[in-house]
Amino acid sequence: MTDTPASLEQIASCVAGYDPNALPVAQAQEFIARLVPRVDAVESVAIRSALGRVLARDVVSTIDVPAHDNSAMDGYALRGTDLRADAPTTLPVAGTGFAGARFDADVPPGHCVRIMTGAVMPAGLDTVVPQEFTRADGDRVTIPPGVVRAGDNRRLKGEDLACGEVALAAGRRLTPADLGLLASLGRAEVPVWRRLRVAFFSTGDELRSIGEPLDAGCVYDSNRYTVWGMLQRLGVELIDMGVVRDEPAALETAFRAAAASADAVITSGGVSVGEADHTKQVMKRLGDVLFWRIAMRPGRPMAIGRIAVDGGRGAILFGLPGNPVAVMVTFYAFVRDALLQMMGAAPQPLPLLRAASTEAMRKKPGRTEYQRGIVTRAAGGGWQVAITGSQGSGILRSMSQANGLVVLHHGQGDVAAGELVDVAPFDGLV
Ligand code: AMP
Ligand code: MG
Image 1 (cartoon, rainbow, N blue to C red):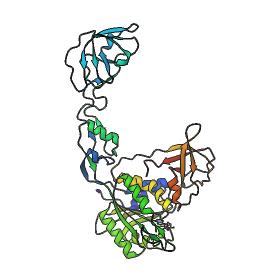
Image 2: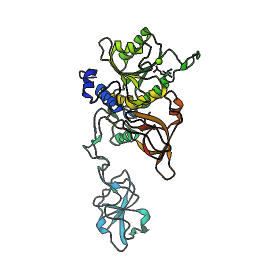
Image 3: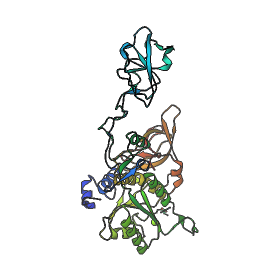
Image 4: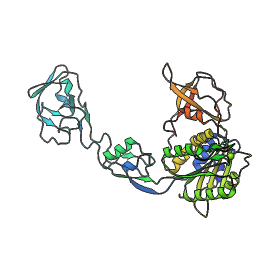
């Protein structure tokens, strides 16, 4: 990580309308975007290892793709000027062009060449008539009028990528199509930002890990699994630190180890106002941390800042609330984009669907609400969304049943049945 980082106070002063006790989602997002640094090390990886990685430099094409004008069809290549407009055209066939081979012979005027898909266009010929439109008779072929225009069915040299053109820009998270594009350029390796390291743990004395008996008043730690899953989808390096007991020494050890080994630390639990446990105290003591109350539901409390130990550069802390749904929603609203920014990815807002709400929803202006929804195809076309039963922030089933989050924006009020609302589909999200 480079540059001298701005203090949290400086960042807050740059965010218009900053109010830590009633922070609109957009302001919290802006704050976090100003806070998080990008990894600064680049490594070269083979293209099959580059899927989902973030490109660190522009990839410029060193060749034309395709390298020659070539045929898009099996058929006959000819000069467009030889086609008759209102009567069949009959041309002698001067030879055959195969894919992967050059066709060096001159084609005399008024002649055509039998050609295969991908074969290089013989010099002077600019048009391909698909075979199914033609009638062959010995070494002559007849083309009815009007089935092709001059220039049809020919792929031009460099039409996919021209030599010198940026094929993929830095900041791109590489997709399967991108891997193919790199291969079409003959690239074996690409420069990508190093993987982001993210440590995470759950806090709370009531938490038990799988395999432990569930004592009275206890719950199994589920957050570590949802967080693990969401981080896995982002392609970061994971450091799972388990459940940390609510004891200052245990918390301090965990935070120190996390800050020493990771770029970002994600915790859940212990950040609410009036929280009796030690998590907040230890965060405050070890780092430069703010405790926000965000104007959103679910997910109101959140800690954000840096934890630096032993003169290290420190790690970004995302102290998420404890409730299982709130963890996922705050991850979606804040952590995902922040981690992508740290990974070097160019900002890429997630697409929102517009779907008709199947029912009326109460909504107070002045906060952002995220309802768990099931999006389906509406009878008359378009999308509709139904809410998944109880929306309590502890009810993880509502999230599991849903296939998207209905986003009721900050200024929005009550929603009538049938009204269009924004939905963030989970696919590609978490
Ligand atoms: P807290 O924010 O620590 O007050 O936790 C809020 C609620 O979330 C409490 O009911 C906790 O038991 C629950 N909770 C906190 N952490 C977890 C976790 N890792 N897994 C499941 N539930 C949790
Ligand atoms: Mg707690």
